[in-house]
Image (cartoon, rainbow, N blue to C red; front, side, top):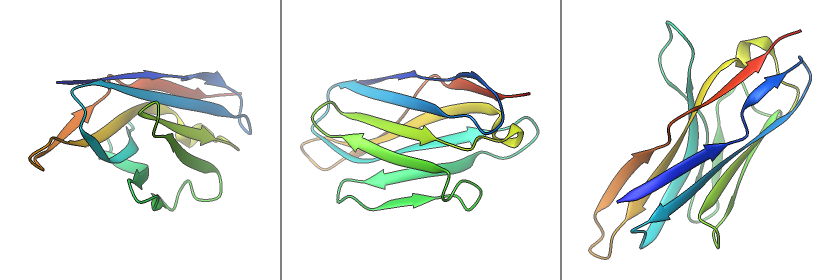
Length: 120
């Protein structure tokens, strides 16, 4: 089993910044991908940003040039630096990690979610 612990959410004014962290622990042989999703009330879940083990990254159009995803492989931790935050960024953010075991089987894990609120 793999556990994910998220931190870093909170309340910020428009234009402000927050940094989310997600640390993975447990039975980890290899992490294939790490990412952040969000789901606003009444909307579908959105992939905000992701990164694969080779270093490639991708972003939703709505956050490009504002958010940056990074990872610390030694700590099995992924970060999301969020700058120039807007009220429409307000929602719960979920960490997602794809973990491979020694046989190559890939499992998907989700964090508990962390609330980001952007308000004047």
